[in-house]
Image (cartoon, rainbow, N blue to C red):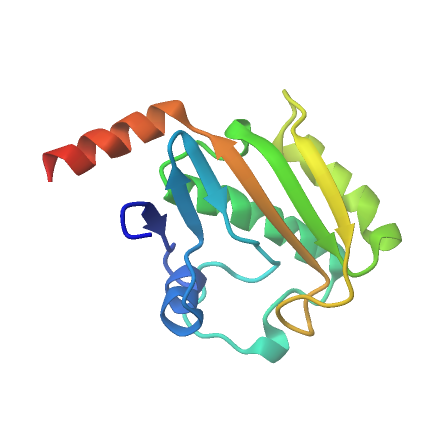
Length: 152
């Protein structure tokens, strides 16, 4: 939909937009909806699917959460403080569950979002073991985006 504001952060986001035809985030009213974020280096400029994500599982999960925060801020939000919904995708829930909770508590110490935890057999790369997508409520950022659009 061409009337929605879409975002592709520098590095992986721009590469994915060009080569895979998807945005990292989109604004819909007062919400920022993010595409799934994996444990890749979001700011990288060259990509190899064989070494896309961290080899250490906990580092992969931690990086995915960091990428979500980066994605939200690139889309004009304030990061995880505005997140109200999380969906996680794990290739092995028992080995990942506690680390996900660790990150939820780390990134959102003052509130608890709704969370759906899904077990999956595969993700976008056969090297990926974890992915997360989030939605955030950003009333102030939405107003600023509307104002900027109106002045163009």
